[in-house]
Every structure is written in C-alpha cells, then in structure tokens.
Amino acid sequence: MHFSFINVITTKSITFKCLAAYGIKGNFRMGKIIFIIAGLIFALLLVGLSASQGMGGSKAYDQSGYDWMGTPVASGDRVSTIVPDYLSPNSAGRPEWDPYGAGQSAFSLLLEPANPASEGLVVGGGELPANQLYLQRGKDLLTQGTVSLGEPYVLWARVNGRGSFLLYDYNRQILNQGYVTQGWYRINGTYADYLGQHIYRFVSAGLASNNLSIMVDSGSYPTSFNLAGRVLDRNGLGMSGVKVIVSNNEGGKFSTTTGSAGYYAIDVATGVYLVNAEFPGYVFTKTSVQAITGQVSAARSVVGTPVGSAPPLIWT
Image (cartoon, rainbow, N blue to C red; front, side, top):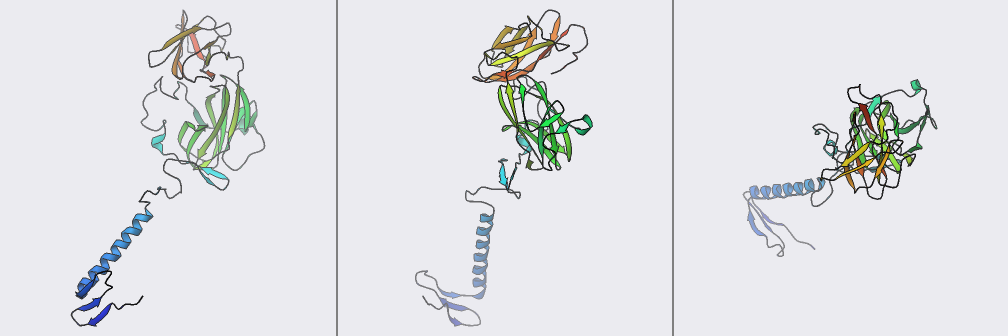
C-alpha cells in the first residue's frame, strides 16, 4: 500500500494528507508536529517501562531471581531460599514467650561456634565444601540416623559463607540466626518431639544444605496415646506418682499420673498444650508441646526440684 504524507512544503507550515481510514488531514505548523511526535515517543516509553516492571498481572521477582515469598528456586544442583525477616517468628520485636503459642517452647535452640575436631568428632564420609548438616551420635557426625522419642540430640552445621542462618524441620522454620560467618557450628536444644521422621536442612547465604534425615523410634515411651512425656528429678531419674496437668488456652485441662519410671501418656485433641506437674515438696519446670491427633508426640521432660534446694542439675 502506497501513500504520500507530504504534499506542500512552505516556510511557515506543512500540509500533508493521510489515509482516509485514519481521517487525518490538514495544515499543521512545524511546532505542532514536533509536539505530536514527542508525545508519541513519551507514550511508547511508558508502555515499555510498565512491561519491564511486571505490570498487567505478571509476577514480580527481585534481582536475585527469587519470588518475594521466599519459594525455593532450583539452580543447577543447588536450591536457594530467601525468606524475608518479617516472616520469621524469631525476628527482632518478637513478644515474650507465650506458653500456648504454636511452635514455642521454654527451651529454644542455640547455635554456637564450635570445632568438632577439637572434641574428637569424626565426619562420616569426609568433609564437603558445601553447606552441610550432621547429627552427632557418639563421636560420629552422620547425615542420617535414628534416635528415640523424647531424646535430646545435637546437630552440627558446616557453613560455607556469610549471611543469615535459617534452620528448617521439613518446611517449618525452627531457628533464625541473623548473621553467621564461615565455619562450624553446634546446634543445641533439638529433641525427638514426635514419632516418625524429621527432615532437617538449613539455608545460609542463600544456599541450602543437604537434607538430614532422622528417624524417631518409640524407645521406652508409651505410644498408646497421642501425647507422652516424662517427669525427672534433679539427678535425671524418673519420678513416679507425680500428677501431670496438661492444659490449653481454650480452658481444657487434663491430668494423669506418672508410672514407675516417670513416664506418662494421655490422649488429647490437636493443639498446643502447657505441661506442668505437682508433687508434695517439689517445684517443677514447665514446658509446652504440640499434640496432633493420630500422631504420637512427646513433651520435653519436666524436672522436679525439692522446695528450697538448688536448681536442678539437668535441663532437658
């Protein structure tokens, strides 16, 4: 299709004719033409800018290539995760411990620099340069293992960079350390809180570690009910005949009595419970536990101390 835009050129104006389909013809001064062209260029720039910013229903990503909610993104054989600080329950400004708060406990995890070699520990399979997570069993550091229900255990992390440290059990974040440097760290405070498998991993400097698989067996704990636990004296021995009270923030209150080795078990609905104990002449620590219908969970041990005596020697 051929047409001519310019018919007559004078020093003061330009006369041009467009296709009738566009309905544009007439005399335009040079200033008007320049103004129209500038407006068209500006409109094109706006359209391009909007497209680059993800407008029109597109999903926005940051410069690192991760979506803003912290979804893991595969890159080669590595998986990276970025989780904003405001999504963490352990970030600054967190309120005081709520005994009924989901995932909260009187015993928190502790990450501290440590050297496994100086403690005579041996890394199974040898050390790897990437972020690695291990379970300590005796003098061995393992990438999988078995523990008993209610048993405390120690994890070790080898961090290969600098940045935040986020520890997960499956997809549940259980530790948020604001900043770590390269090296070895011991993680105290973990324990086998339910029967079955734990899958731990950590993310540091945007890179994920290996998956650490820990299978939890029943050990000596009763498993006929979905919530079990143990009451110990200050020397770590089981206390029998102790009244155990389990309560929630909805007014539910349940009680049972420990057996000869200090174990107890009770059936409760799914929820977060506060566990306390009563026995003449003793005061007891408290703990909280998440109970789930159809799954055997174990509360951390409650420790009893004679009234007026020193604090207990053990805190499990």
